[in-house]
Image (cartoon, rainbow, N blue to C red; front, side):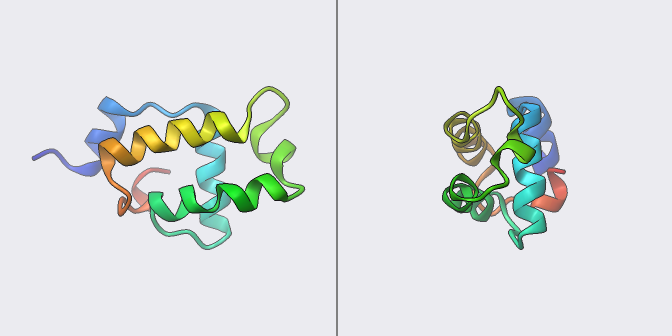
Length: 83
């Protein structure tokens, strides 16, 4: 079995927006990929969207990327191993 970080690198290559979202969620207290995913609604309602995602990316696009990451790496994957 491969370590989680290898799964992340080999099977899930997140965009800059997804990585920024994971950093934001980590700063807001998320510890796992699943917790970061659960915080997307909070991000969507916050004033942080342009700062986190920039002008061209959407919360929905990041949601799809994180769903793929959860399917491959698992919801309990620590954010500290992904950032």
